[in-house]
Length: 296
Image (cartoon, rainbow, N blue to C red; front, side, top):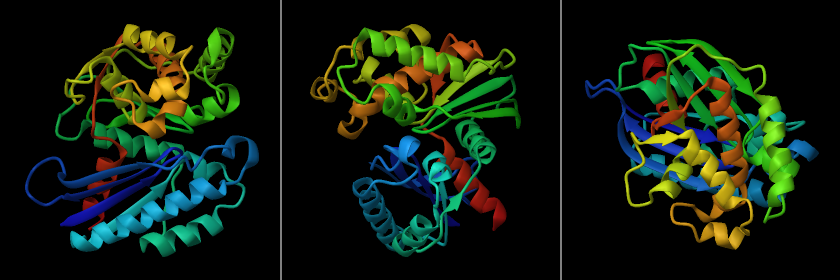
């Protein structure tokens, strides 16, 4: 069965078209797309979507609808995460998103997002030892611990966009604001403690940090150390957006929030006691695709 999974995130709108009935344990990817629209910028303070990011998101969803038609997709599921959970009245957005995409997005809770991310990150690589999946988004961070199935999860309301909006909206940030951002991130994760285990990292912030560290090497399967993340924070502290955009491996739309994202990753790794993460390019989208297959 050919399915499409759409993730309407705080910073990025993503699409996966995949076949799920070819006998393999993981969805067979047909097409994967990602567009940075910044939908959640400013939502933390205003409780509303700004017109520009909203328009860019709806335009992206319309383009994804066209792709699902071209690739003869049989079932589509769209989810909306942290930013959509935070807006005061999401109904108008959901109406317009349904018109653009052809299906109505579901606003999913953090624990549902966490379970789908864990399934996606671990599919195709059977987990037989305790593993913690770290999914750093724009508005929230999902931490999921388990073996073959997730046994514990926590959604923490801090992410690359939320931290940027609060403390790092003007770049270069400088050492004093970076110190304040690090303190805020550490406080957000203060109550998070997971049992020992392997670490897996997913999401655009983590893949971007891996690409920054070694832009000529594949991202998937790479081990990213805590020292690498701290080095990225220190490297970005005194850089303008233009200089960040010039770094190999950083997409232009992610440049404004990658410092905030790196600080969130640094704090989250410290909270779960991970000295390194294995970077996975399978994530929430793959979990949605598998869930669609199950429902069918």
